[in-house]
Image (cartoon, rainbow, N blue to C red; front, side):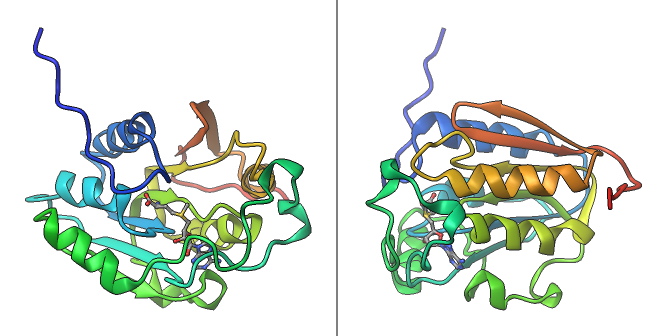
Length: 207
Ligand SMILES: C[S@@+](CC[C@H](N)C(=O)[O-])C[C@H]1O[C@@H](n2cnc3c(N)ncnc32)[C@H](O)[C@@H]1O
């Protein structure tokens, strides 16, 4: 059996197994029409691999980041295990992100520098088939989920990092609150990630 080469990672913000999960889920939407988004792209650790996977594929790739690092925590994010996560941590410039993708020889995605709570529906593609959410905090997961909901196509997948990470409890709280409203969204947890399948064409909303 030929062993595949280990993935080259630009930072420790995701590990090899997590990137492999993202790429596997991305390949699972091969026959579904729609674009790909990443909220929280940092230096492009995962974006490089997504962009490579999308080469020659008729989909647009959009990334969103403050490029100023994390915002302040909400109460939902407080954890004795997560004191290293503070406002301004994980700041990487847009220039650094672009340089990393150019160095990797992959096409540049559409890059939007913004705080997620300042984004509007026009900033998000009309049809989203795949989303990777890696904003770490409660609001940084919940805002993108709310923005994405009306744009998700039937069969879309959302992968959320840090769902099972006690240092970042806000991520799971945001996902669980959102899931409670959308019973057509089915969750599975693998490694520390949540993998959500948006199953139905008719999104039912619980009031
Ligand atoms: C864990 S890093 C993302 C790692 C990245 N996915 C990778 O593979 O390298 C989190 C990123 O989310 C961004 N971020 C977090 N909350 C945000 C918010 N509310 N608005 C904009 N960017 C945010 C931070 O600036 C940071 O770059």
